[in-house]
Amino acid sequence: MKIFSGTANKPLAESVALALGLNLSPLEIYTFPDKEKRVRILDSVLGVDTVVIQPTATPGNEYYLELFLMIDALKRSGAKSITAVIPYFGYQRQDHIFRDGEGVSLEMVITLLQALKVDKVISFDFHAERIPELFNIPVTPLSALSLFAEQIKQEKLDTADAVLVSPDMGGIRRIKILAELLNNMDYVVLEKDRDLATGEVTTASLDGNIKSKRQAILVDDMISSGGTLIAATNLLLKKNIDKVYVFATHAVFAQGAPEVLQKSALARVFVTDTIRVRTSRQFPKLTILSIAKQLANEIKQSCQ
Ligand code: R5P
Image 1 (cartoon, rainbow, N blue to C red):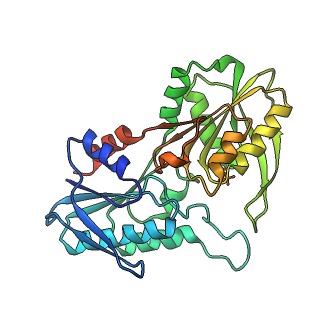
Image 2 (cartoon, rainbow, N blue to C red):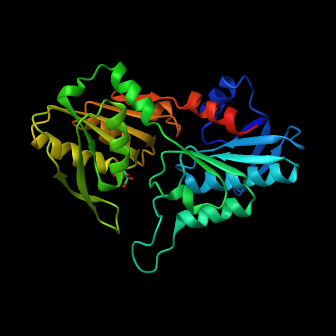
Image 3 (cartoon, rainbow, N blue to C red):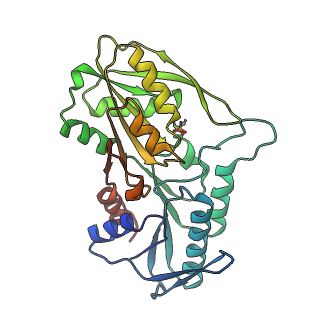
C-alpha cells in the first residue's frame, strides 16, 4: 500500500503514514502561472493499492480539484485501487434543494468521484447520517465522538453537573451517541433558525430541560463562522449555565471565526485535525485532538 497527500493537510497525512510505519509516497503538485495545477506521481504504483489523503475545506474548490487530479494521475499510472480519504468532506451541507433553482452540490461531488473510478471513500463525521448511502461505492464514515468522550473523561469535566447540548436538531443522533459513551449523560437539543440566503444564524431556542446543571458541553460536526455556537452559548448562559465547552470535529473556521470564538463567552473549544488549522489561526481557548491513529487503524484494516 502507498499513501499520497495533497496540500490540504500534510501534517495529518504524515502522522497517518508514521502510524502505519510508512513514508508518504512522493508526488509533484505544480502550479502554473495562471494557477492551474498539474499532478505527477513520482513513485511506481502499478498494481499497488493506493490511498490519497485530502480534506476539502477552505479553499475547498482548489482542494477538490487537486484531489481529482491526484486520483486521475494514480489511475493513469496503473494503481490497483484508490481509496480517497477525505477527512472533511466539503460541499456536504448542500445535500438537498433548500430553495427553488438550487443544485445539490453534495451529489455533484459524489458523481465526480465515482466518474474518476475511486474505489472507496473514508471520511469523518458527515453532516448527515444518510450521506454514505448516496454513493454507489463503499464509504466508511468514521467519527470523532469516541475521541471526544475520552477527552471529556481526561479533562475530568464534572459530567454530573454538566449537560450535553446539540446546537440544532440535525445533531440529535450525534448527541445521543456521545451521551451513551459517557454513561448516559443528560442531553438537550436546541432549535436553530438560519437565514437561507446569508447563512446567518438568527435564533436558537431550547427544546428540553437542563435541570439545575451549571456546565454545558456543546457538540457539533463543524465550526464554520462560529455563529451557531455563539447563539447557543448566549442562550445557555441565560439559562444559568456558567461554563460552556465545545467539541466539534471539523475546524472549518471561515474568515474571522478564530477571533470570534476566542472573544466569546466559551470556556474552551476542542476540535480535531481533520482540517489543518495553521498556527497563525490557533487561539488560546483551542485544543486540537488528532484523528491520525484512528484513521491509520481503518486504513490498515481496509486498504490492503
Ligand atoms: C449545521 O447544521 C452544522 O451542523 C453546523 O452547526 C454549522 O455548519 C456551523 O456553521 P456556523 O459555525 O457558520 O454556524
